[in-house]
Image (cartoon, rainbow over all chains, first blue to last red; front, side, top):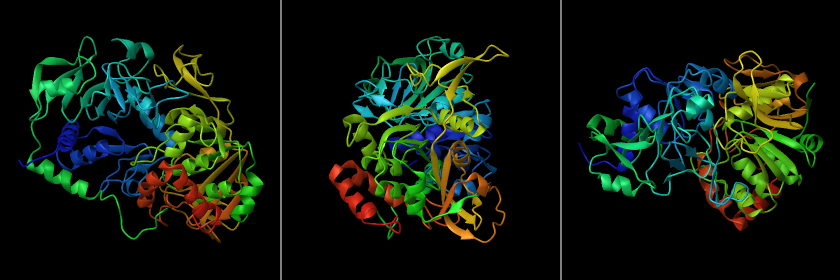
Length: 261
Length: 273
């Protein structure tokens, strides 16, 4: 095992959470990197569904956007956007949905809409919902991947864009949300899971070298620690090699291309 | 029958001040050239509709064309914020922008309802979120057969939908493939439609998975090679990822945006996309 970064640990932990053969709804960024890492390591039969309507994509490199043409070139099917949401996501055909968050609260609710102020005049206007509300509602379970910081891990989100466990246990059933919700939150410090009784996100795993105090200091609520707290295994050589090979395909800036400047 | 028109004539004929205009394309086949023509023709008070308002709508909003935005995700994909959009929402610059915000599933179903001639769409969605709070256009509805509570959203019926496709034939039949997005629904939901195309051919040959829009379902077709740049047309061009990265600095500042607008849109003419 060599040295690795906190983001590499987070990505590897997210990849490990994907079992072989699962059907996974993927967004761009760490979720896409983690899903493609899983395909190259322990889960060669993972099925990747991108919200641009590509089903069963097998990208040879990391896609640069959700609509990268690569995703449509080697896949089981390309469908329109209404179909991906109505036929594939809504009925519960997707096992795992990956989400990120600008704010995440202790009940696993997600905000990607506005921070501060009121809705009409926010301090920060975020991109909005995208596919997240229905991913959070209808995937059999959700994995949230997000860096752990006091300003993003808050007691209560400013705006509920996507529902985790609502405000109390039983809310998901009452609201008619068919999936199990955010069963796993993977951060750059460790892993949080909902308490079986209260649904409150609780620290259940720590990445190598991270302390409970660090995780609590990075959390904007009084973070509970599980009695069965585990230490996450560091990335092994194979995981790191595949991850870095994938990342190398993401060189962001080409040369000699037309620019708008 | 679709009329084959030069882009400036097509925009002039189809897009009017105050119209509800949808420009669709899910990261693929985004009609940038047509949008820039709308800016050049100084259209005002538009209600802009688009699932993923990205750079093109940042440009239209910054240029002062829009009074309202109907959308589900507004960002620069993989890069960050849309700064002209944020400036309009956070500071009313250059003009106030009213938001009508949905989820992707909600927007997609609203187009489906519009294309289907129905007044509204039904979906499992929005329950428990703040998206529907106090909104008259996101409403619970009871299934008459099971008693289940679902969500209703109104149909989208744009005055005009604009999109880009790989090709059309000389009769105006349109064909596109690759990532399909929601363009078919957006065109069929609209009163009028304009499709810009990479090429016009004598006859459309079949392509696996392609969508064909018959000429009688389209109002106008314009021949605009490269008209999706910096987005792409599968089989014709690659996405210009550098442009999306560079846009962050240009869009962040009102003056640099104004310079970009002068140089690349107003002075440009249709060839400069």
